[in-house]
Image (cartoon, rainbow, N blue to C red; front, side, top):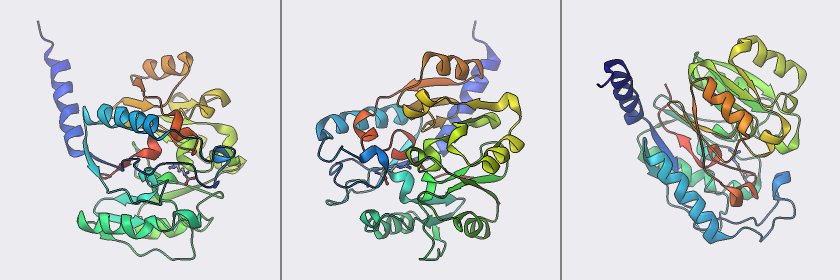
Length: 287
Ligand code: ARG
């Protein structure tokens, strides 16, 4: 006997997924060629392109099971371009192109701008003097009309307020204090149903208090150092299927208990550059 309710939920989930589109960029020229975060130290020239390609393909295939994928053409000489989370920040029909703090990544800006324009996004102006690294630092909450914006490492302290005027949505700035977790998406992940995975020591005390003020205790999934270092927070939530590089059995059980399905997709080559699943994706549909 089929269960009508379960069936209806599956159909509803499939419909929701059908509206999402995720931007990726093939790692054709992926490499570690400079050091702009602690993960890249001692890794110059150590990434294996063929293995990176296989890991990226596996991630792409897993996401494609439920979600449409858009591809931006990779450019030679831009080894970090595969990290499309840093293309910009998308909300509704508006896109804000990143203003990279890292000189080495600035040449990606016009390429991502052209992509957003070709896709029909309205391009919001962003002040050149304010560093802002897109959806690496600005994350749309999945339960309330709220955007979380990390600052202090790559995006400037002025980024949250600047974003608030453009996004016309409440923005909470979160100050990052551990260089290993230099983008918000390395230590914080809003999930469907109002859950939040986060690594508390990565935040200044006030910012940690802000997360705890906005998120009821039963919705907080605190990530310990070991899981944080596996980039468990750097996860893509595909309507409850949580795709991530790795997670301890305890974290997987915690996610399962909250109704999520963790899926591991190893991305070790990209970890050498300081990124994993979430960094390699950008959701193009954000309400
Ligand atoms: N090597 C890249 C950089 O430091 C990695 C970017 C990871 N992206 C992210 N959204 N955390 O810019």
